[in-house]
Length: 383
Figure 1 (cartoon, rainbow, N blue to C red):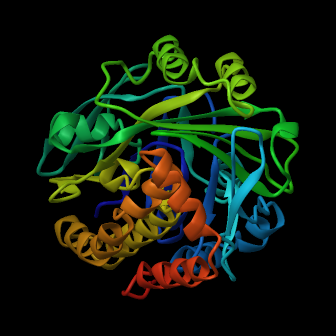
Figure 2 (figure 1 turned 180 degrees about the vertical axis):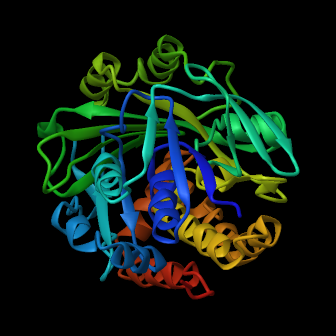
C-alpha cells in the first residue's frame, strides 16, 4: 500500500495535500528548503471550488476572519489622479495574504516536517523511491509528490530540465513591502507607463502594504535565487521612472530583504506523474500570478490528488491518471491570462487610455463576472 508519502514544499499545495492525505489514513512527510513556513507574500484568492475545499478542511471561517478586504484595482496618472476603478469583489469568495493562508494550513496539517532541507536525488524502483537529502540520510518512501513551485527540484529530477516545461510570458514581476501611505486603503493602486506597471496593494485588515511591479521584456539571464541580480534588474527597469510614487516604491522594494522577483511564466506538461513521482501546484501547472488563480488551483488540485490516491490506494498509476483527468480542464482555463496582462500592463500610452476608458464602463463588471463564471471548474469535488 502506498502509504509513506514524501511531499516536497510547505506552501499552499503541499500543506493542503498533507492535510487530506492524513485524513485519508496515509503517512505524509513534508520537506521544505526554508527554515519554517514562509511568511509574507502577496494576496491570493480563495474562490469557487476552493471555497468548498476550505469549508471541508474547517478553515473557511478563519480565512474569512483574516481576509485582506481589498475592493479592487484603481488606476492613477503621473500626478496620482484616479483615471478608473474596477471592483473585483466576488460574492462568496475571499482574498487572503499568502503567508496567512500558509499559517492556517500548517495549523491544520498534523504531519512530520523536515524544515531546512531539500531533495537532492530520487531513485525509483517498482516498490518505492529512495530519496537523498541535503542534510539527512537517504530514506525510502512509497511515493514522492513535488509541491515545490515554479522552479521545482522534483520536476527537474523526475521529468527533466525546466526549459522543457516553462513558457515565458514576456513579462517580469516583483513585490515587496511598501509604505501604506502611498496607496488608498482597500485598493490596489496602479500606475502605468508603456510596458510597465508600479502599484501599491493595501489591505483593509493589514497594516503592511505591498509594492507591486511588472514590466514587459525579452527573456533576461539570471539565477532565480540570485537576489542581488533581482535588485539590479528591477532597478534597471524602473530606475528612470520619476512619475507618481514610483521612486519611493522602488526604494522600499530594493531595501526589503524579502523582495520577490521572477519571470511571468507558466508550466505546461503532458502529464504530472512519472512512475511513483507526481507534481501538484505551481510545480505542475503554474498559471502565473497574472491569472489570480494560484491558490484556487493549489487547493483544488491537492484535494483531487489526495482523493484519487485514497480511492486507489494500491494503484498509484490509476490514481495519478484520474487526478490529471479531473483537474487538467480547470488548469487549462486558468492559464488563459492574456486579458489580465493587457489590463495591468498596456503596451502603449494609447492602450493605457483605452484600458481606462473601458474600465470606467459598467460593462466591465458584467464582463468580469462572465469570465469568472466561465472559468469555474466543471467537475464537482469528490471525497
